[in-house]
Length: 446
Image 1: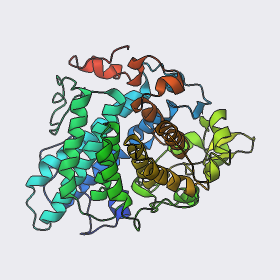
Image 2: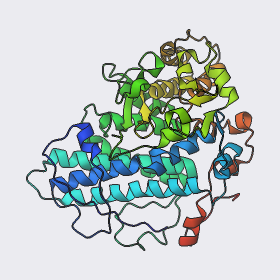
Image 3: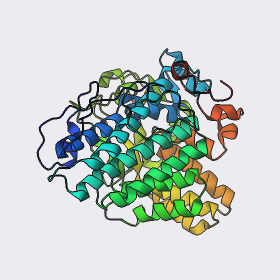
């Protein structure tokens, strides 16, 4: 694996930023030198570059997100590229361009975060206060934690790189760590980020609340139900800041951004930062291609008033009477939703159910159902409740990167998707990476 260090050319900045002002300037890229981060302005620009890499089309722009939902059971492919159908058929080739794009994009985030962590710490600029310096470094730790989390759940163990790439050969020869060690790196980075970040509300940049939300998800994946409940509760407790908005479409309809539903959302201004994800979903009359569409089974579920409720807003019909996905409503500026408060309620519901605290779990599940316009559910056994939570997550996050990963982490992929080969629960390491670096080994079964 070879990674080129991206040089962040400095732009003239004001001394303070709004969230959108901070994110809307796209960093320029070129080969590095040793003086890329040396003052407050360049430190801010470097962190902006980290967020730009998260927003990239290979990561939360399109490719990585598509892995999470195309591999589930809600989406059909209406185009002709077989590499997309590979996810739906669960026969992904190491030559698949989507996994190659996602792998490279995620490691680009890691490299940029490594630059910030390494260099901002030693910047000596009177304008860069210690508190703000800590915040910038904390944001980089959070970004790196998110990146390694997504690598671990997609590929298992991966090369762990925590130092900046200075030459194209720096990352060669690093063997893959185990999946457990990769997840350990995630927790280490989250632990480092937490005390550095302010306890403020910021839906487009990492704060301490953002760390708590990702910790809740992390602990759910690691089957630590107590900590999953604890960290979900920390975020849910701030009921003024984070709320499930009603109706369901309120967090995306009308091209709104940064509603109280969002804990961490990727911002695109549509000019210097664009997200082409919507073009895959929207019909031709809206400027898209509708190459990804809800399948018949999902359309039936989401339009069932007893199951989908007002989440039927996730789908609509075009002028040819064909169903299309309605979450990403802009051709070039739809947000990407990384962490929503609804997920925290369902994380806590699942954790509580697995701890046999069924009444509290039902309360959390019904908070999400109430927002969807559904009646309260009654479940008498743990098994019934866990299945109800699984089904709720399927509808709630239908076009977000959850369904495949949910079924794998709960051991339900075989029963629901008929994917009985456990080797297929991890994706192949991109063949290009294997060819470039002989230290990399392929996942079993590929």
